[in-house]
Image (cartoon, rainbow, N blue to C red; front, top):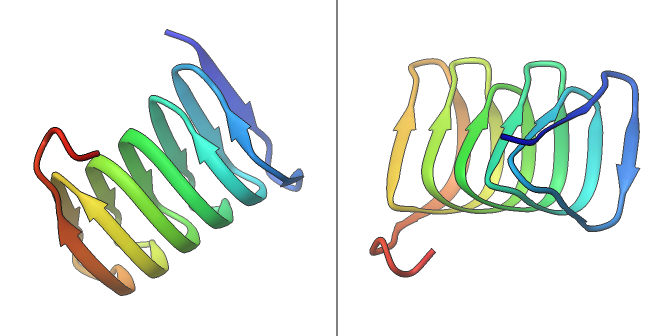
Length: 106
């Protein structure tokens, strides 16, 4: 049940591995690995995301590898998405290649 919160206005550069939920309101460049990654509407990231659950409300550029990926209407993405389940809300700006993986591949 660990929860990490990266505040709005904060910037991170490098690779980050955290247990539990990683909530991003600032900006990150690099690879983020967690159980759950949530990029809030004010948040942005460039690089790689790897988690069981990934929720994007803000901006992301790079590669996503996740089991359950949700893109909210406010999301702006470019890059690649590998997923088991993918939900894209109407209004999301998505310019990605998407590939569905088997449950054991993520």
